[in-house]
Amino acid sequence: MIACENLVKIYKTNDIEVMALQGLNLQVKQGEMMAIIGNSGSGKSTLMNMLGGLDRPSAGRLAVDGIDMLKLTDRELSRYKRETVGFVWQNKARNLIPYLTARENVEIPMLLHDRKKKRERAAGLLEAVGLGHRLHNRLEELSGGEQQRVAIAISLANRPKLLLADEPTGALDTRTSAQVMELLRNLNADLGLTIVIVTHDLDLAKQVERVVEIRDGRTSSEMIRRADEAEGAQWSDGNGESDDTHIEYAVMDRSGRIQVPEHYLEAVGAKNADKVLLRLEEDKIVLLPERRERHGKM
Image: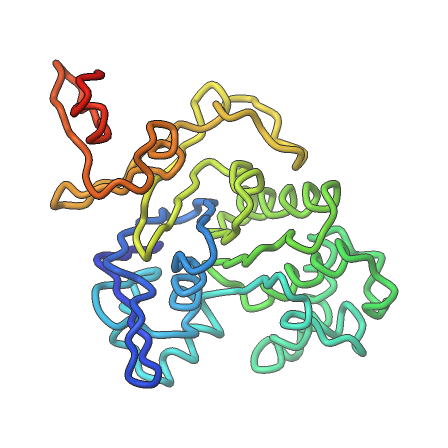
């Protein structure tokens, strides 16, 4: 569904160039539900904007559902946003119109198509997200979790193949967050919808099978849910999972470059080191801070 190869994004302001993405690589399978995490400024929001057609790459390759995003005309890009991708934003003001009812909000994206059936389809989508009894309620009559469910129904109105969720539970309490995540998992399973969640919350991210971390504009590491956790395991209620639910892998590019996760560097006292020592020991590559080798401590 998504293929990023050496993806670069450069922003220019007042003769200053900022590289938001620096050769990012990412593959997402059709029907997968995964999460992208990263600190502020890591490039995850830039990537999401390009996946959603809100921004264009500067270089590299970006394909979504076989569509080359670098070659789209403005008209083709508008069609892509209408027909291929759906959005759920953390800021509900970007999703919802407060003076309309829940059903009227869901009908808005269908004004350009499905006009004759929009009322019936809107009711069906609200039923699918558990709000069939709230069709005629205005937003002030809905809880925060119910409003986010309306936002998810809106994102499905154009029958997207890819759903992008930006901090979908950021403004919700723990219990409501768990309900929204359960809804997203059900939509993924029942509709085969590809879902990409962008978040800074690792506990939230670990509620999916695969987590990709972006650091300094590149994919840094991937966490894959352990097989014994995936088989019949109960999903977290949002209170945090144990640290061993996922296996973490460093991502290596074709030149053999990797980004060592910060917590590993901190653990060995090498976070601010300019260089480290690499040793090949039998079938292992060992990384050591320079100071340890100098003092003869292995």
